[in-house]
Image (cartoon, rainbow, N blue to C red; front, side, top):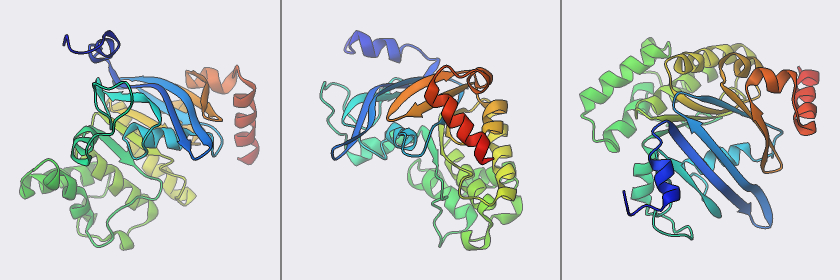
Amino acid sequence: MAHHTNREADITHDPGTVLSARNVVKRFGALTVLDGVSLDVHRQEVVVMIGRSGSGKTTFLRCLNHLESIDSGEVLVNGRRVGYREETDQPVEESPSKIAVARRNIGFVFQHFNLFAHLSALDNITAAPIKVLGLPKNEAQERARDLLKRVGLADKADARPSTLSGGEKQRVAIARALAMRPELMLFDEPTSALDPEMVGEVLAVMKELATEGMTMIVVSHEMSFARSVADRLVMFDSGHIVEQGPPERLITAPQHDRTRSFLRLLTDGA
């Protein structure tokens, strides 16, 4: 690995680090949404990102798999840069095909499901493994049926999204992300678009994934979930990480004023 700089070699040679974000800056016009954010996430770790709406956490999540480009800094998953060429100091964007390859290891679950309306649950799950991984159709379908069973929807293989509840759609979306066998799962407020009675069924699937050792980064306001499942809470404010640590400590004894006021806001709103 002599062609790597030392900085990259350090990251590449730590098999325990799945994600390494370094000084990520993201601007929308004159607005700096992320102002030099750095975060390492270790294998089998569950990190929950909290903070007010507009604090930068969703944008950061989207930068991690290059749904948003970044203005400076770098994102590495398993030691490989995502979205940009390895050898340059200034970010030079990779080709769409190279970006697609980098994304294979990163599952993304959106707030609003993003399922294909014209496809059955089964076909939603098999589309990417067949097209991107070149999996034979019967193998992809077998994998999809196993995943539907795993998320409690074995009987919904032929159902179109329009016939499913919000909680069922989100569980299909989780199964779809898992079908690519990712090493890192990103969840963007996966329960915020759901009716309250459906939140539990989605969180139960996520808890199960965490128990099985999936590396996860979750943007969520579900503090009971964070408390019971997260290894670490990360507090965003105005494009910065202001505080991070074990959930129990952060919730019961936050060090930063912004964390205190945010948690108060959640308690008052509950």
